[in-house]
Length: 442
Image (cartoon, rainbow, N blue to C red; front, side, top):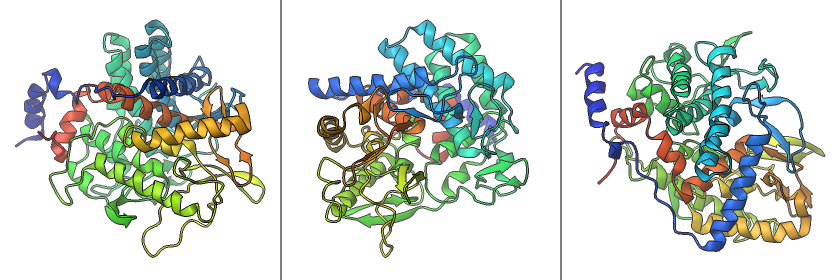
């Protein structure tokens, strides 16, 4: 059957609100847990409110834990989280609907009308004030996808605002997804450079890219084949009794796509028939076990309620660098030799929506124990520091936008399912999930 006919038939089915993703299902939390998450979430939102340029809507890549401005380097991925944060804040009354809409409109106007794009794709890093390319960065597939996730979230959250809807639709429908395949039938290049063309690396193995492939399959103007969903490798791993699909070391690969896509009660109809929500639960539990085993080497750093390693700042050769670390490693491979006892709070925080029974105690324990030791250097204006090392006493002075973002979105999905609710109301998304074979169960 012609794809356009199928889309039309599915569209009729999707007219009913019940088909627009699962309704929000507030988690039953203790008053103490709810108060903790309210405080953490409001602090995380404050990062996006204060570190966004008022003229472009671009969100700075990082800031000091207590609000210190580091530079005007902005990240489009952080901006995608920031757009989504506006919906959370408007729903919870942290800012007014008028303020949130205006901020969203500013951001969308910038990307629709002023930002450089290559066939709809954007540079990874931009100057927050001018919008110019920074760091000779690539036109990035995954970072554009995270931006688009925020764009489509505000399109539904502020659906009564015709201008926001039109701008968001323009940004999404302009993206030429097949162009970024660079001749491959199903697998995306990781980016493009004006100086040298397409990057040779492809998104060919399970990672945080599920949001990228879903948006591409869902595109009403420039779609790719649903077969692309099954083209990337799925490598199973078993660790501490947990079997799951694994990829790069950082735990965030199991979190970012889930911040928007509601995979609950869905299972693939083909291949390994993976339940991706359950997969992230197992990955988080295995990661905690990995940290507990590291406690033998770093007893001051890791324990039952102090755990978590994902991409973060780190100290290497007496300099602060960015480490894409985590674990556990596949069987037969040594653990990352860079691991030195550093703990990254966003690892546990980003899994709140999967494993609140272990993530909440970890975050509350870390706040109580290390705030007493390090004060506002550890838990400040924007919440937890990006990373710290109880073994050496190092506390990072910064927070990083994407880590603050996954903390906020995961906490909100745990509390009320708000992000899932708005993102899944985009009819293109449900149609794509049906094309893939990820229909709701039951």
